Image 1 (cartoon, rainbow, N blue to C red):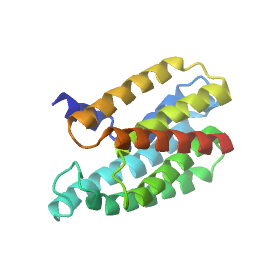
Image 2 (cartoon, rainbow, N blue to C red):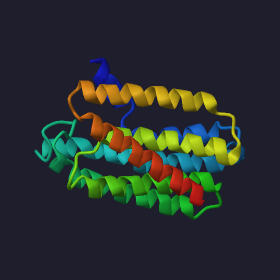
Image 3 (spheres, rainbow, N blue to C red):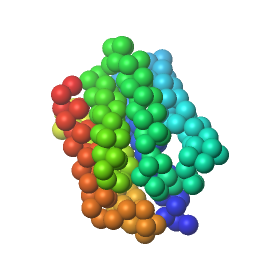
Image 4 (tube, helix red, strand yellow):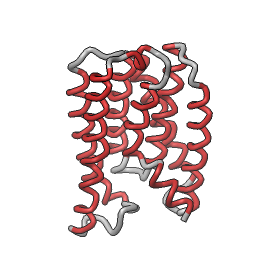
Length: 199
C-alpha cells in the first residue's frame, strides 16, 4: 500500500509542477518574477502537464486500451506517451513565447525531450517513467544550484531521498528491474542537465 502511495505522489506527471514550484522558491531570478507571470506559468504547466493527461487516463482504461492505471504493459504506454509529448510541447510553445529566465524554459524543454526519448525507447525497452520524471527533477535542482548559485541544497537532498523511495517502490511492486530503474533515472537527469545548460 505504501509503495503504491509513493508511486502516485511521485508520479511523473507531477514533476513539471513540482519543478516550477521549486524554482519559484529557489531564491533566484525565477523567484523574483511578478505574481501575474508566475500565475500564468503555473496555470499553463498544471493544465497541460498534469490535469489534461490525468483526465485521459480513465478513458484509456475504460476503452480497454490499458488493463489498469499502472500501464504495466509496454504497448499500453505508446499512445499515452505520445499524447503527453504533444501536451508538453504545447506547454513549451506557450511558455517559450514570453520573457522568462532560461532555467524555466530549459526545464520545460528538457521535460518535453525526456518524454519524447522515453516514447522512442519504449518501443524496445520498458524504461521506468517514474525514474525519468524524478531524475529530471533532480537534474533541474542540480543545475539551478550550479547555474544560478541558488542555495536549495535541502531540495536536492529531498530529491535524492525521494529518488530512492520511488525506485524501491517500483522494484517492490514488480513493475521494473534495476536496469530499467537506473536507465530511467539516467535518461531523465542527463536530458534535463543538458537542456538547462544550453539555455
